[in-house]
Image (cartoon, rainbow, N blue to C red; front, side):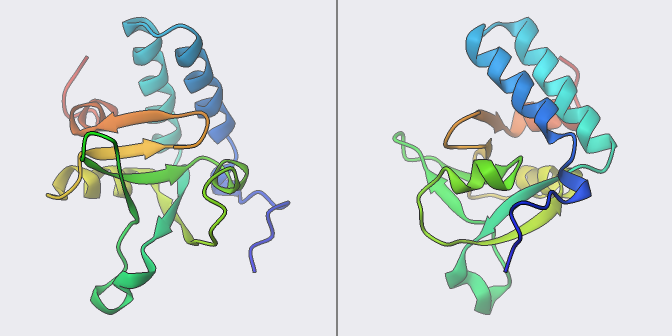
Length: 142
């Protein structure tokens, strides 16, 4: 049983990501996007973690991150900055794990069947395609 009132230490500081995404939603611009990516990179470098939902049907083949399909038919992994964000969603009970951001981002870049990662798909949302993930990881610059 997850205790949702307890915030895991590795999630502390993710509120900075939520604030940056909120600011980006208010004022969508290249500058705000760059700021948001910088905040995410900073959290990644502090060994911050995200909550991921695992696809329960994948247990036999090794755990797989649950993907959602957007209206355009593309698939994305979902990740959450906090248990509060995760709980805003579908209402279905998900198997969740904490995962290291850097590991998750690297995995997403090499996964063939997805476009990237959507952080907080229900509320403070940012869609990080593979190009944006590479920017966060420092592989390419803005």
